Length: 165
Image (cartoon, rainbow, N blue to C red):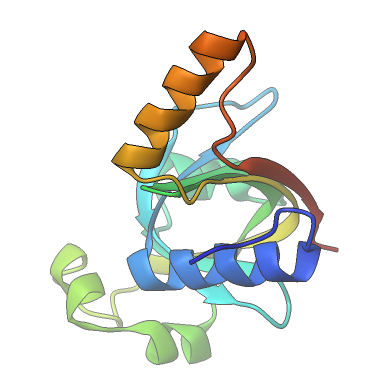
């Protein structure tokens, strides 16, 4: 799948599609309350640029997100890497819990979606940096060889800066 990094709409569409397909991201709070990023299952709402996550109320992430916190979400696949910034908040949203509850989520929350400790986090995405390459192993090898022979850098893709507000 070729994506022109100058086409902001195409890059944003590809970012959300890849996250929707894979679902696993790394999420963490940044700034004064910074902590290690954690793997989380992401549920994308493209129309609002929000990403939702299940968690328990007493987790480090939920406690740090009380009242809103600066956060980052990172995502990586073979041909796309991204870092998305925004505001993370705790939202006890039973409608979304019902919408996104599935066997994968249930495996992590054995008491079920009615567990009073269960809540959701909402990342309101503000911006992103996305790196995209369409180079497979042959093109990668060719570009590294060409770059070394011509004293240039490999042409393996590009970076896009997205404003998601």
